[in-house]
Length: 436
Image (cartoon, rainbow, N blue to C red):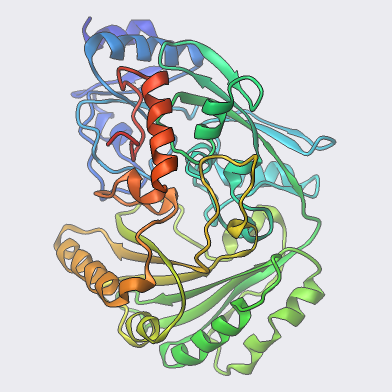
Protein backbone atom coordinates (compact mmCIF):
# COMPACT_ATOMS: atom_id res chain seq x y z
CA UNK A 1 0.00 0.00 0.00
CA UNK A 2 1.58 3.25 -1.16
CA UNK A 3 1.37 6.35 0.98
CA UNK A 4 -0.45 7.87 -2.00
CA UNK A 5 -3.39 5.62 -1.08
CA UNK A 6 -3.98 7.78 1.99
CA UNK A 7 -5.37 10.46 -0.31
CA UNK A 8 -8.43 8.28 -0.95
CA UNK A 9 -8.49 6.58 2.46
CA UNK A 10 -9.21 9.73 4.47
CA UNK A 11 -11.67 12.61 4.21
CA UNK A 12 -9.15 15.17 5.37
CA UNK A 13 -6.15 16.56 3.54
CA UNK A 14 -3.05 14.52 2.68
CA UNK A 15 0.10 16.48 1.87
CA UNK A 16 3.12 14.57 0.59
CA UNK A 17 6.71 15.47 -0.35
CA UNK A 18 6.65 17.24 -3.67
CA UNK A 19 3.34 18.97 -2.99
CA UNK A 20 3.63 22.75 -3.10
CA UNK A 21 2.55 23.23 0.52
CA UNK A 22 4.40 20.25 2.04
CA UNK A 23 7.21 22.20 3.73
CA UNK A 24 4.74 24.54 5.41
CA UNK A 25 2.47 21.68 6.49
CA UNK A 26 5.35 19.71 8.04
CA UNK A 27 6.88 22.70 9.84
CA UNK A 28 6.30 22.83 13.62
CA UNK A 29 5.70 25.98 15.64
CA UNK A 30 9.37 25.96 16.64
CA UNK A 31 10.88 26.61 13.24
CA UNK A 32 14.37 25.67 14.44
CA UNK A 33 13.21 22.03 14.37
CA UNK A 34 13.34 20.21 11.02
CA UNK A 35 10.82 17.39 10.47
CA UNK A 36 11.63 14.91 7.71
CA UNK A 37 8.28 13.15 7.64
CA UNK A 38 6.77 10.83 5.03
CA UNK A 39 3.58 12.85 4.82
CA UNK A 40 1.16 15.10 6.67
CA UNK A 41 -2.48 14.16 7.21
CA UNK A 42 -4.98 16.80 8.31
CA UNK A 43 -7.48 14.36 9.80
CA UNK A 44 -11.17 15.25 9.65
CA UNK A 45 -12.58 12.73 12.13
CA UNK A 46 -11.85 9.59 14.14
CA UNK A 47 -12.32 7.42 11.04
CA UNK A 48 -9.46 9.30 9.39
CA UNK A 49 -7.28 8.64 12.43
CA UNK A 50 -8.12 4.94 12.24
CA UNK A 51 -7.27 4.87 8.53
CA UNK A 52 -3.88 6.48 9.16
CA UNK A 53 -3.10 4.00 11.91
CA UNK A 54 -4.13 1.08 9.70
CA UNK A 55 -1.82 2.27 6.94
CA UNK A 56 1.04 2.86 9.40
CA UNK A 57 0.70 -0.66 10.81
CA UNK A 58 0.99 -2.16 7.31
CA UNK A 59 3.79 0.13 6.17
CA UNK A 60 5.84 -0.10 9.37
CA UNK A 61 5.72 3.64 9.95
CA UNK A 62 5.19 5.65 13.11
CA UNK A 63 2.35 8.14 13.58
CA UNK A 64 3.10 11.42 15.35
CA UNK A 65 0.35 13.85 16.34
CA UNK A 66 1.17 17.55 16.59
CA UNK A 67 -1.75 19.95 16.94
CA UNK A 68 0.69 22.89 16.91
CA UNK A 69 4.22 21.51 17.18
CA UNK A 70 5.31 23.55 20.21
CA UNK A 71 6.99 20.45 21.64
CA UNK A 72 8.47 19.14 18.38
CA UNK A 73 11.88 17.45 18.56
CA UNK A 74 12.63 16.60 14.93
CA UNK A 75 13.25 12.97 15.85
CA UNK A 76 10.45 11.63 13.64
CA UNK A 77 12.13 10.81 10.33
CA UNK A 78 9.85 8.80 8.04
CA UNK A 79 6.81 9.14 10.29
CA UNK A 80 3.32 10.22 9.28
CA UNK A 81 2.54 13.58 10.88
CA UNK A 82 -1.08 14.01 11.95
CA UNK A 83 -2.54 17.48 12.37
CA UNK A 84 -5.81 17.82 14.30
CA UNK A 85 -6.80 21.44 13.56
CA UNK A 86 -10.20 20.25 12.28
CA UNK A 87 -11.02 18.87 15.75
CA UNK A 88 -11.95 22.40 16.79
CA UNK A 89 -15.14 22.06 18.84
CA UNK A 90 -15.48 23.76 22.25
CA UNK A 91 -18.41 22.99 24.52
CA UNK A 92 -18.69 24.71 27.90
CA UNK A 93 -21.07 23.26 30.49
CA UNK A 94 -21.12 26.16 32.94
CA UNK A 95 -23.44 24.44 35.39
CA UNK A 96 -21.17 21.40 35.74
CA UNK A 97 -18.01 23.50 35.27
CA UNK A 98 -16.74 21.19 32.56
CA UNK A 99 -15.27 21.86 29.12
CA UNK A 100 -15.18 19.38 26.25
CA UNK A 101 -12.74 20.40 23.50
CA UNK A 102 -11.40 18.86 20.34
CA UNK A 103 -7.72 18.05 20.16
CA UNK A 104 -6.99 20.89 17.74
CA UNK A 105 -8.10 23.62 20.14
CA UNK A 106 -5.67 26.17 21.60
CA UNK A 107 -5.77 27.48 25.14
CA UNK A 108 -6.68 31.02 24.18
CA UNK A 109 -9.85 29.73 22.54
CA UNK A 110 -10.86 27.81 25.66
CA UNK A 111 -10.18 30.76 27.93
CA UNK A 112 -12.27 33.07 25.77
CA UNK A 113 -15.18 30.62 25.80
CA UNK A 114 -15.01 29.98 29.55
CA UNK A 115 -14.40 33.57 30.68
CA UNK A 116 -17.95 34.65 29.86
CA UNK A 117 -19.14 32.23 32.54
CA UNK A 118 -16.60 33.40 35.16
CA UNK A 119 -14.64 30.19 34.63
CA UNK A 120 -11.12 29.23 33.64
CA UNK A 121 -9.21 26.17 32.51
CA UNK A 122 -5.73 25.48 33.86
CA UNK A 123 -4.06 27.18 30.91
CA UNK A 124 -0.43 27.96 30.36
CA UNK A 125 1.12 31.36 29.69
CA UNK A 126 0.77 31.36 25.88
CA UNK A 127 -2.69 31.43 24.26
CA UNK A 128 -1.63 29.63 21.06
CA UNK A 129 -0.32 26.50 22.80
CA UNK A 130 -2.52 23.49 22.08
CA UNK A 131 -4.65 22.22 24.94
CA UNK A 132 -3.97 18.56 24.17
CA UNK A 133 -0.17 18.44 24.02
CA UNK A 134 0.14 20.73 27.03
CA UNK A 135 -2.27 18.64 29.10
CA UNK A 136 -0.92 15.22 28.08
CA UNK A 137 2.47 16.37 29.36
CA UNK A 138 1.04 17.55 32.70
CA UNK A 139 0.67 21.26 32.05
CA UNK A 140 1.45 23.99 34.56
CA UNK A 141 1.06 27.74 34.36
CA UNK A 142 -0.38 30.60 36.38
CA UNK A 143 -3.11 28.46 37.97
CA UNK A 144 -0.98 25.49 39.00
CA UNK A 145 0.02 26.60 42.50
CA UNK A 146 -3.66 26.83 43.38
CA UNK A 147 -5.15 23.91 41.42
CA UNK A 148 -2.22 21.69 40.42
CA UNK A 149 -1.45 20.04 37.10
CA UNK A 150 -3.82 20.58 34.18
CA UNK A 151 -3.66 16.83 33.58
CA UNK A 152 -5.28 16.14 36.93
CA UNK A 153 -8.31 18.25 35.96
CA UNK A 154 -9.08 15.89 33.05
CA UNK A 155 -12.26 13.85 33.47
CA UNK A 156 -12.33 11.96 30.15
CA UNK A 157 -10.11 11.51 27.10
CA UNK A 158 -11.47 10.67 23.65
CA UNK A 159 -8.95 8.60 21.73
CA UNK A 160 -8.38 6.28 18.83
CA UNK A 161 -6.21 3.42 20.09
CA UNK A 162 -3.41 1.73 18.16
CA UNK A 163 -5.86 -0.85 16.75
CA UNK A 164 -8.00 1.94 15.27
CA UNK A 165 -10.80 1.68 17.84
CA UNK A 166 -12.39 4.92 19.13
CA UNK A 167 -12.76 5.04 22.93
CA UNK A 168 -13.83 7.43 25.65
CA UNK A 169 -11.34 6.77 28.44
CA UNK A 170 -12.21 7.55 32.05
CA UNK A 171 -11.05 6.50 35.50
CA UNK A 172 -13.78 3.86 35.50
CA UNK A 173 -13.52 2.56 31.93
CA UNK A 174 -9.73 2.09 31.78
CA UNK A 175 -7.84 3.21 34.91
CA UNK A 176 -4.34 2.41 33.60
CA UNK A 177 -4.72 4.22 30.29
CA UNK A 178 -6.48 7.14 31.97
CA UNK A 179 -3.60 7.45 34.42
CA UNK A 180 -0.98 7.36 31.65
CA UNK A 181 -2.75 9.93 29.47
CA UNK A 182 -2.79 12.45 32.32
CA UNK A 183 0.83 13.56 32.33
CA UNK A 184 2.58 10.66 30.63
CA UNK A 185 2.74 12.22 27.18
CA UNK A 186 1.16 11.27 23.86
CA UNK A 187 2.56 7.77 23.46
CA UNK A 188 -0.48 5.67 24.24
CA UNK A 189 -3.27 6.62 21.81
CA UNK A 190 -4.22 9.36 19.34
CA UNK A 191 -6.26 11.88 21.31
CA UNK A 192 -9.23 13.44 19.52
CA UNK A 193 -10.84 15.28 22.46
CA UNK A 194 -10.55 16.13 26.14
CA UNK A 195 -13.12 16.74 28.85
CA UNK A 196 -11.80 18.63 31.85
CA UNK A 197 -12.85 20.54 34.93
CA UNK A 198 -13.19 24.31 34.90
CA UNK A 199 -12.68 26.53 37.93
CA UNK A 200 -14.49 29.61 39.17
CA UNK A 201 -12.38 32.72 38.68
CA UNK A 202 -14.52 35.82 38.86
CA UNK A 203 -11.49 38.10 39.32
CA UNK A 204 -7.81 37.96 38.36
CA UNK A 205 -5.05 40.51 38.98
CA UNK A 206 -1.60 40.39 37.44
CA UNK A 207 0.92 41.78 35.03
CA UNK A 208 4.56 42.64 34.58
CA UNK A 209 6.83 45.24 36.14
CA UNK A 210 10.14 45.71 34.31
CA UNK A 211 13.36 47.56 35.14
CA UNK A 212 16.75 48.18 33.53
CA UNK A 213 19.26 45.40 34.23
CA UNK A 214 21.13 47.42 36.86
CA UNK A 215 18.22 46.64 39.21
CA UNK A 216 18.59 42.87 38.80
CA UNK A 217 19.90 42.09 42.28
CA UNK A 218 17.16 44.17 43.94
CA UNK A 219 14.50 42.51 41.81
CA UNK A 220 15.86 39.06 42.62
CA UNK A 221 15.78 39.80 46.35
CA UNK A 222 12.16 40.92 46.03
CA UNK A 223 11.31 37.83 43.99
CA UNK A 224 12.73 35.67 46.78
CA UNK A 225 10.60 37.53 49.34
CA UNK A 226 7.43 37.27 47.29
CA UNK A 227 7.80 33.55 46.66
CA UNK A 228 8.63 32.69 50.27
CA UNK A 229 5.40 31.88 52.03
CA UNK A 230 3.19 33.23 49.22
CA UNK A 231 -0.44 32.07 49.26
CA UNK A 232 -1.29 29.45 46.64
CA UNK A 233 -3.35 32.06 44.77
CA UNK A 234 -0.19 34.07 43.98
CA UNK A 235 2.31 32.91 41.33
CA UNK A 236 5.48 34.91 40.65
CA UNK A 237 8.09 34.51 37.91
CA UNK A 238 11.42 36.33 37.52
CA UNK A 239 12.51 37.18 33.97
CA UNK A 240 15.88 38.41 32.70
CA UNK A 241 15.98 39.46 29.06
CA UNK A 242 18.74 40.20 26.57
CA UNK A 243 17.03 40.94 23.25
CA UNK A 244 19.50 41.75 20.43
CA UNK A 245 19.73 45.48 19.90
CA UNK A 246 17.85 46.27 23.14
CA UNK A 247 19.27 47.15 26.55
CA UNK A 248 19.04 44.19 28.99
CA UNK A 249 16.12 44.20 31.42
CA UNK A 250 14.74 42.34 34.41
CA UNK A 251 11.07 41.82 35.23
CA UNK A 252 8.70 40.28 37.71
CA UNK A 253 5.58 38.70 36.23
CA UNK A 254 2.77 37.59 38.52
CA UNK A 255 -0.84 36.48 38.70
CA UNK A 256 -3.11 36.63 41.72
CA UNK A 257 -6.30 34.58 41.60
CA UNK A 258 -8.65 36.72 43.60
CA UNK A 259 -9.64 40.22 44.63
CA UNK A 260 -7.42 42.80 42.88
CA UNK A 261 -7.18 44.82 46.10
CA UNK A 262 -5.64 41.84 47.86
CA UNK A 263 -3.36 41.19 44.90
CA UNK A 264 -2.16 44.79 44.98
CA UNK A 265 -1.48 44.49 48.70
CA UNK A 266 0.48 41.24 48.36
CA UNK A 267 2.66 42.68 45.60
CA UNK A 268 2.93 46.28 46.86
CA UNK A 269 6.65 45.88 47.47
CA UNK A 270 7.13 46.07 43.71
CA UNK A 271 6.69 49.83 44.13
CA UNK A 272 9.72 49.98 46.42
CA UNK A 273 12.07 49.53 43.45
CA UNK A 274 12.31 52.81 41.58
CA UNK A 275 12.80 53.29 37.88
CA UNK A 276 10.34 50.83 36.36
CA UNK A 277 10.42 51.08 32.56
CA UNK A 278 7.15 49.18 32.11
CA UNK A 279 4.21 48.34 34.36
CA UNK A 280 1.21 46.38 33.09
CA UNK A 281 -0.41 45.51 36.42
CA UNK A 282 -4.19 45.43 36.42
CA UNK A 283 -7.35 43.37 36.58
CA UNK A 284 -7.57 40.74 33.85
CA UNK A 285 -10.09 38.37 32.39
CA UNK A 286 -8.99 34.71 32.27
CA UNK A 287 -9.05 35.17 28.49
CA UNK A 288 -6.26 37.76 28.87
CA UNK A 289 -3.82 35.55 30.79
CA UNK A 290 -1.40 35.62 27.85
CA UNK A 291 -0.91 39.37 28.30
CA UNK A 292 1.18 38.84 31.43
CA UNK A 293 4.27 37.43 29.69
CA UNK A 294 3.31 38.54 26.16
CA UNK A 295 5.12 35.55 24.64
CA UNK A 296 5.41 35.27 20.85
CA UNK A 297 2.31 33.87 19.18
CA UNK A 298 3.81 33.44 15.72
CA UNK A 299 6.11 30.52 14.82
CA UNK A 300 9.75 31.27 15.55
CA UNK A 301 13.10 29.48 15.98
CA UNK A 302 14.16 28.75 19.56
CA UNK A 303 16.32 26.50 21.70
CA UNK A 304 15.41 25.91 25.33
CA UNK A 305 16.48 24.12 28.48
CA UNK A 306 14.39 23.56 31.60
CA UNK A 307 15.42 22.38 35.06
CA UNK A 308 14.10 22.25 38.62
CA UNK A 309 15.95 24.10 41.37
CA UNK A 310 16.26 22.93 44.96
CA UNK A 311 16.97 26.40 46.36
CA UNK A 312 18.10 29.91 45.52
CA UNK A 313 21.59 29.86 47.02
CA UNK A 314 24.84 31.69 46.22
CA UNK A 315 25.51 29.43 43.22
CA UNK A 316 22.14 30.43 41.75
CA UNK A 317 22.83 34.12 42.34
CA UNK A 318 26.28 33.94 40.77
CA UNK A 319 25.14 31.91 37.76
CA UNK A 320 21.64 33.18 37.01
CA UNK A 321 21.53 36.67 38.49
CA UNK A 322 25.01 38.20 38.36
CA UNK A 323 26.19 36.66 35.08
CA UNK A 324 25.18 38.15 31.71
CA UNK A 325 22.16 36.66 29.95
CA UNK A 326 23.78 36.65 26.47
CA UNK A 327 24.06 34.62 24.32
CA UNK A 328 20.62 33.61 25.62
CA UNK A 329 17.49 35.69 25.20
CA UNK A 330 15.82 34.84 28.49
CA UNK A 331 16.57 33.41 31.93
CA UNK A 332 13.34 32.64 33.77
CA UNK A 333 12.80 31.40 37.32
CA UNK A 334 9.29 30.33 38.34
CA UNK A 335 8.09 29.97 41.90
CA UNK A 336 6.48 26.56 42.36
CA UNK A 337 5.04 24.89 45.47
CA UNK A 338 1.40 25.00 46.48
CA UNK A 339 -0.75 22.31 44.88
CA UNK A 340 2.11 21.24 42.61
CA UNK A 341 3.94 19.86 45.65
CA UNK A 342 0.99 17.78 46.82
CA UNK A 343 0.51 14.14 45.88
CA UNK A 344 -2.98 13.24 44.67
CA UNK A 345 -4.10 9.63 45.04
CA UNK A 346 -6.44 10.12 42.07
CA UNK A 347 -3.83 11.98 40.02
CA UNK A 348 -2.21 10.97 36.77
CA UNK A 349 1.33 10.07 35.80
CA UNK A 350 2.63 13.54 36.60
CA UNK A 351 3.13 13.38 40.36
CA UNK A 352 4.12 16.00 42.92
CA UNK A 353 7.08 18.32 42.36
CA UNK A 354 8.78 19.11 45.64
CA UNK A 355 11.40 21.48 44.23
CA UNK A 356 10.40 25.08 45.02
CA UNK A 357 11.57 26.68 41.76
CA UNK A 358 11.77 25.94 38.04
CA UNK A 359 14.42 27.33 35.69
CA UNK A 360 13.77 27.96 32.01
CA UNK A 361 16.48 29.09 29.60
CA UNK A 362 15.73 30.30 26.08
CA UNK A 363 17.91 31.15 23.11
CA UNK A 364 17.27 32.21 19.53
CA UNK A 365 17.46 29.02 17.45
CA UNK A 366 19.46 30.31 14.50
CA UNK A 367 22.11 27.97 13.07
CA UNK A 368 25.02 30.33 13.73
CA UNK A 369 24.03 30.67 17.41
CA UNK A 370 23.25 27.07 18.34
CA UNK A 371 26.78 26.14 19.44
CA UNK A 372 27.12 29.13 21.76
CA UNK A 373 23.64 28.62 23.20
CA UNK A 374 24.16 24.92 23.90
CA UNK A 375 27.52 25.73 25.42
CA UNK A 376 25.92 28.30 27.71
CA UNK A 377 23.25 25.79 28.77
CA UNK A 378 26.00 23.38 29.82
CA UNK A 379 27.96 26.09 31.64
CA UNK A 380 24.87 27.04 33.65
CA UNK A 381 23.86 23.50 34.57
CA UNK A 382 27.45 22.59 35.50
CA UNK A 383 27.77 25.69 37.68
CA UNK A 384 24.48 25.00 39.47
CA UNK A 385 25.59 21.47 40.34
CA UNK A 386 23.37 19.90 42.98
CA UNK A 387 20.97 22.85 42.88
CA UNK A 388 19.34 21.17 39.87
CA UNK A 389 17.85 17.73 40.31
CA UNK A 390 18.01 16.35 36.76
CA UNK A 391 14.28 15.62 36.73
CA UNK A 392 11.88 18.05 35.16
CA UNK A 393 8.29 18.51 33.97
CA UNK A 394 7.56 16.72 30.69
CA UNK A 395 6.69 20.04 29.05
CA UNK A 396 10.20 21.33 29.91
CA UNK A 397 11.89 18.59 27.86
CA UNK A 398 13.80 19.83 24.81
CA UNK A 399 15.10 18.15 21.63
CA UNK A 400 17.80 15.63 22.49
CA UNK A 401 16.39 14.85 25.93
CA UNK A 402 14.62 11.67 27.00
CA UNK A 403 11.24 11.17 28.61
CA UNK A 404 13.14 9.36 31.37
CA UNK A 405 14.14 12.79 32.74
CA UNK A 406 10.48 13.59 33.46
CA UNK A 407 9.57 10.58 35.61
CA UNK A 408 10.81 8.64 38.59
CA UNK A 409 11.88 5.04 37.76
CA UNK A 410 8.68 3.41 39.04
CA UNK A 411 6.44 5.78 37.05
CA UNK A 412 8.54 5.32 33.92
CA UNK A 413 8.40 1.52 34.26
CA UNK A 414 4.61 1.62 34.58
CA UNK A 415 4.28 3.92 31.57
CA UNK A 416 6.45 1.62 29.50
CA UNK A 417 4.37 -1.40 30.47
CA UNK A 418 1.16 0.38 29.47
CA UNK A 419 2.76 1.46 26.19
CA UNK A 420 3.80 -2.10 25.32
CA UNK A 421 0.37 -3.45 26.17
CA UNK A 422 -1.64 -0.81 24.29
CA UNK A 423 0.66 -0.30 21.30
CA UNK A 424 2.75 -3.48 20.91
CA UNK A 425 4.05 -2.45 17.47
CA UNK A 426 5.04 1.03 18.73
CA UNK A 427 3.10 2.79 15.97
CA UNK A 428 2.07 5.85 18.01
CA UNK A 429 5.02 8.06 18.85
CA UNK A 430 5.12 11.06 21.16
CA UNK A 431 7.58 13.92 20.85
CA UNK A 432 9.39 12.33 23.81
CA UNK A 433 8.57 8.61 23.66
CA UNK A 434 8.63 6.62 26.89
CA UNK A 435 10.34 3.73 25.05
CA UNK A 436 12.94 6.04 23.49
